[in-house]
Figure (cartoon, rainbow, N blue to C red):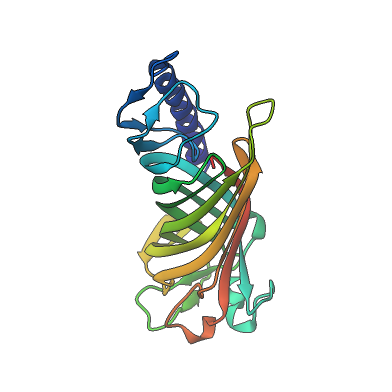
Length: 269
């Protein structure tokens, strides 16, 4: 995770430099150019492919469609399990007891397509990836290829026992930003529905007896999850929260009603 965070910081810096270079190279004092342009950058305002006039004055953005490659809405926070509306796990789910401060959510978007109505409001659909890492307290192993979610108790002391899911996330965002203040920043509010398509489930364990082990399976994680999200903040950084209406697991009756809620910091939105 530390290497991943370090890589993200490098990418953000590189994207910001690239965006600034692109802006400088297309600067003009008085001539309006009509052209298709592609920009790669951080945040909702950076990436675009459009036929809009490219001018040196960007305080007010014209309506229009846009499409682009981006590295935006980078979420890093905590994941919490909600069992029938309670933060306390029921007896059927006690084997999933987890360490809250080490149970995390991480995700980002890579592409987006949208329509801007004016400088303050736009809607867009985007695509990216989302991971949830549950740090289990118990020395158990979630089993693969079983009819329902099943585990075994092990006579091994795991220094790390992580149960993870990865999803392709596809949010539909309704985006609002305030007028630019004296420092050139905006208040931003983004909210909307999100669907996720399961990519993989994984158990990662570290112990003195077996070293580092990784096991991949779907582990009965819900293949198509549905939820809502909200992001708000000032400038480049803000906070986010996501809640999924669908259960975390499917075809496993004992886990019915177990849902996922995540919250934390978001960058580049």
